[in-house]
Image 1 (cartoon, rainbow, N blue to C red):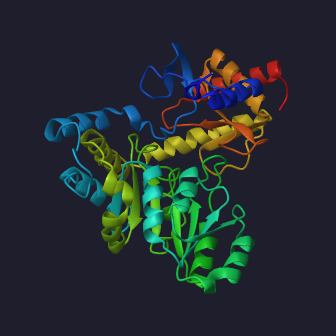
Image 2 (cartoon, rainbow, N blue to C red):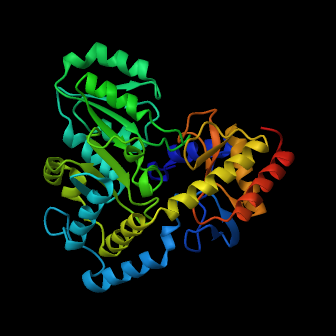
Length: 394
């Protein structure tokens, strides 16, 4: 036996296998669309974040090709040295207009955005208040900060105010952080109430709108726009890898925010900027969203159709207020079995189990897109019903 055999990891993997929760990653063999081929089998795709069908849209692909021809494959540098191309400047300007903010700053991913922004805008003597169900990237970003931390109960304004009453006077700045749309349950943050409390106690507000960007608000402008809270949210984070169809993240807010973060957000200082092909496609994606609300309308129409049919069939779909639709299975091993059987029948939905969600809260998280047809969604509902008959009631 050798230390290099990594037996301690093998024991952990064997434990997952014994619990029935070990997974081998699926291999996608086509563009990520409504219908895909996974491991050689054509299936209805109900598990991606390609909300608007932009990931393989002809306009974005053409814009990507044009950007490569003009700017090459890679930016060749971090943003702060020589990786800030005119393409990046244009994308940031377009995003600022789209988000109705003074400025926007683009990161390599939404995760990098939270990792870079939170630590750069807080310091010793500050306090961060975070919703208990915030995304993992927020949790990790908070850990990187020198500020003190506290967690309030999910969307519980009484608990949030309790902490503010107890602690606000002890700190220089207090930053309240919440998801705009919570990624596992699809519920919306109580942003109006959060902002009211923030202003009452002189706190800053930070919204991660990864699942609201391109989905909520006018033409998909996001949760802040949905609640008409422009000028009252200090930092709005979004992803460019979901509704926008490519990859990346951004923060939108005041010009001075951008000036500071450009020089202090560590992912921008120590990691190469987004490649031209991605940025070119994103510029076109922002343009398409600005031109029309047809994509978001189709998304919401499909979401309403699927939710209605699943509710009528007696499935527990939680309390989602967005296209994210959790189908609650609760038992982890059973959730994995449901996913496998649905795949065999022609529907792919990834199982969501611990540690992504707490134990006992396992679910199949359905992600409907604007690109689905109602016949595809009806087939998925029919397959859910069939699998329930085979594996037992949930």
